[in-house]
Amino acid sequence: MRVDPCFFCGRPAWPSKGITFMRNDGKSFRFCRSKCSKNFKMKRNPRKLKWTKAYRKNAGKEMVVDSTLQFAARRNVPVRYNRELVAKTLKAMERISEIRARRERVFYKKRMAGKRARELASARKLVADNEHLLPRLRGSEKRRLAELAAEQRVDVAELEQQELETLRGSKKTNRAFGGEVRRLRVRTDGGVEEISERVAGTVDEGGFEDDDDEDGMDTD
Image (cartoon, rainbow, N blue to C red; front, side, top):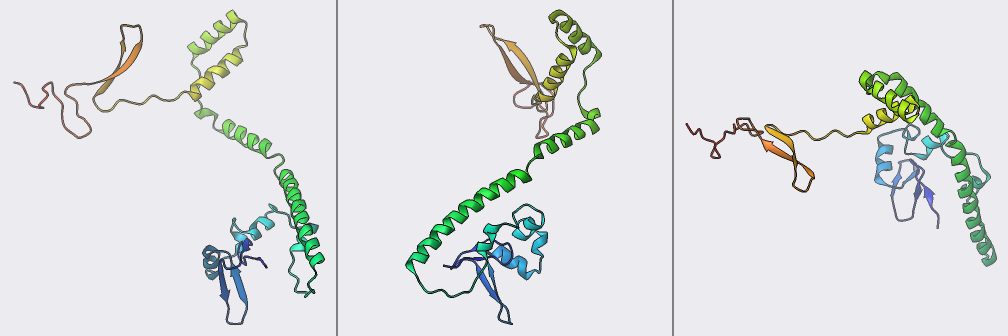
């Protein structure tokens, strides 16, 4: 069973799957899906599309030079059937696929080496350029942290860093709608609960004015 690669993206085009385009001069083009066929008919260059094998090879994201890739070359050489030869060929195919997978993993590790350091460097540069947008501590907060550090014998810079992290990581509470007012009520068991009350005479989201009367009419 021959599995031809897709003419556009390079993926395997399995038998009885995909689309085959026959040109007037007799040349056939095998496509794995309609997406590749449509892009081919629109005369797009596969080397400029990031989801094709040609682009990844030109960008250095896949192996191009390797001895295991030579076995995938198409060879139209007729060979007389031999059962032992077929068994050896199948074993060799499995072994070659294992070797290729291992080499691809090594190639990927070498290609991605240092990516984390580059991401951290770019993140630090972004923070340094936009430092004026970050929240800052007030003078009273700095004095309070200095006094606390003197009492606990801790570095002031560490306390300021922790305070800034809490400020940046704190989530904003939801705002009340229109004429709602949120209050804290102390329960009899000592707990505290948050309640939302509606202020009389305010305009709600629907555009109607609320009065003290439940029917919405003046009581005068």
